Amino acid sequence: MDLAALRACLACPVCARTLQNPTTLPCGHTVCQTHQISPCPLPHCAPPPRPARPRIPPASRVNYLPPPPAPLAPPPEHTPKPDVTINKVLALLDSVLGEDSSYDDDDDDILRSAPRSPTVRTRPDSPGPSRPRKRQRIHDDPSDDEGDLLSHLMSAAARQRDTAPHVSLTDRMRPLPPPPSLEKELQTELACEICFMLLYSPVTTPCQHTFCSKCLHRALDHSNLCPLCRDSLPGFSFFDDHPGNQTLETLLATAFPAEYTARGAAIAAEERDARLDTPIFVCMLIFPGHPTALHFFEPRYRLMLRRCLEQDVPSFGMIMPARTGAGAGVTAQTADYGTMLEVRSVQMLADGRSMVETWSTYRFRILERGTLDGYTVGRIERIDDVPDSPSLTLAGPSNEELMETCTAFLHQLRRGTAPWVVQRLNNVYGAPPADPAAFAYWVALILPIDEFEKAKLLPIRSARLRLRLVVHWIEQLNNNWWFTSGCVIF
Amino acid sequence: MALPKRIIKETERLVADPAPGITAAPHEDNLRYFDVTIQGPDGSPFQQGIFKLELFLPEEYPMAPPKVRFLTKIYHPNIDKLGRICLDILKDKWSPALQIRTVLLSVQALLSAPNPDDPLAPDVAKHYKEDEKGAMGVSREWTALYASG
Image (cartoon, rainbow over the protein chains, first blue to last red):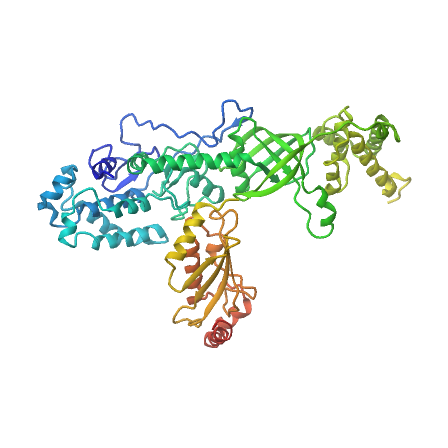
């Protein structure tokens, strides 16, 4: 690890000197606090925006509507907080370079072997060594420690560092490259506080805490507060395509090039693995061939949807929640059957929720279940109809007769119902399909019977048997309903 | 499903560098389930007690908090008969930057600082509010009775 190269990563892009009280701006640039910080003081500041999440593939068939424009970054505070991670790295490098020690000014050995910019130490506007002053501020400012675990740890660590280095002569004389502990310590400072791994695609919040971009998104699915200091964050869409912390990105690529690449590969592999199984949304009974509008708000399903949307044909399975309590055993036979939903359009909302239109395509059976980050995933087997055997086709009334029974029953229902209800039913479910294979599903949608009973249609692989089950329900209803059997006096 | 790297790291650190007065060991057959012991803090009525707890990391951990429960009976206004703990960071104040170690330290701190104004065991809380000395006496008795081995 080359200290000079690390040091060069930590130069302020405005004054070219080592960062002094660095603060990271919403554009991803990190500058000394003494510079103008709103807007970014850099000429032509146009950071490459990080691709928005989710990354919609070009071949995607989904009509994806991004969230409304993110709110402008909140105006920086009067005295902005220092970038916590960069500050810690600066303190660490200082302690290794021995800059804190009062006697290193006359130590030519170290000066020669550490080719750092002399301006750092002889800056006119900072009397004496610069870093200790800053660290002093961190110690003395009680507001820094308040409720902020990281600040506390940071100041504790800084305190340790204040006393640790420059003790013995041999330490002082140690030539560069730096002690092996530096790599480990630097790795600790550059770890994400959510995944505990090396930061990947680091994003810095307005409260100056840095996380992996993916980790921050997942945290925002659950809460709008900073995981470290509980400051409220500007919201999900603000970080949707938020530029990364450029100083840290350079630093990571310089200090841990191999590890950083490996992290990227590991994350990509994780995402690939996540796609191997079919994600399953446990929510309601859906039959094939129907539109369904869904509101995604639960954190785990928000993540599931983001992962889905990165595929060309985003789809997920939908099953009913298992019935608990009485009758649980009866539904066990249908619990593993569901319907695939293809995502047709997505309207993202600013807070990370979304309104999703889907179309149900085919039925499936779950062969094996698992969980992934809180939602169900499974290995599934597609279920299609098989041709009816001649004996089945010939027995009893024909398909047309069965359909006629259903239609007659529905007509009867309509006569006894207010016209606007009929209208609504028509609007919601559309006209009856002519295809007997789909007809039973359509009738079942309208029938006022238990959803778990309706679910029995899903495993049936014969259109004719489905029709017969529906007619069976209708017969039962006809036998039981008081208002279908003559005069009623209220 | 594979165990997230973070849980592996946390477990390694818990075993290699345990927090004072706290042990946590994962079950062999379920690495998300930990057997925990917490020593009663000095100066509290739970002093010298060894309290057994169970800790479970749900599938969404660290986005969702761990589930922690006392297995040893304890007379404390914020811990009920079933061992459930009333602690904000285990509920709405959870943050993914917290971890098993910080959670257990917070539980230990709760033993030092019972909060009868936010009770989970109303009868114990009432006792603590009306007669703190007497209530602490009962806590000490229970500690000797249930948490001494």
